[in-house]
Length: 288
Image 1 (spheres, helix red, strand yellow):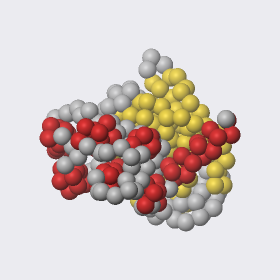
Image 2 (cartoon, one colour; image 1 turned 180 degrees about the vertical axis):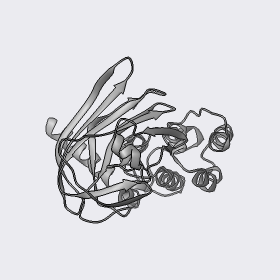
Image 3 (tube, helix red, strand yellow; image 1 turned 135 degrees about the horizontal axis):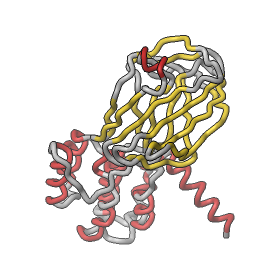
């Protein structure tokens, strides 16, 4: 039995990694509701939510066509409501939602109104659909609009940056500036600053920077083994100690970034040199 469980797990990992290829297959249209429900619930799908929704629409349309190949359970209005509930509409952009969702007639009128209010109202508005990003589509925000070269790592002088969020968010790690195929020893630490300073997590490993330039620099991800929920209005400090070849570095650092309507404020006060020049080695922050 464990052998078959491992095989099933591996199959789902392939689905997670190649979701767009899966939904383009004719076989996808013929899966039963139970299997589709498991697909829609996957936190680890590497797909945009609008593509998940379009695939679901095609599945519903296929089920309502006459013919011997459709799934054995007839898909009526009541039958697919529990499937619709698994679509994470808040993860769509307002334009994606407006262009595709209302005309599909797969959502109740009240849900459409609530979601339009969610997207376009200046006040906070809760909806019943999950807004949790799927792990395969991590949220990244760049901290510097431009980069330069070169910065020489000392191996003993750490860099600090403090994050404060206005709403709880799940933090996973950072992307660092690097060099083409450069290998770096990175020690990353996440601390919470309440009455004192508590270390929440550490990650120490050797990383290899990418071989192709992206966003005008070479870089590498340093991710914790699990995500940590950052509480609202609590300062969290990231500390990184790096050793390796000269790297790119960011300049003209921003003081805040937006992620799906939430704000992350940034401070470099604990790192005098980088604070003075608005420069730094933290290229991006990564949430999920």
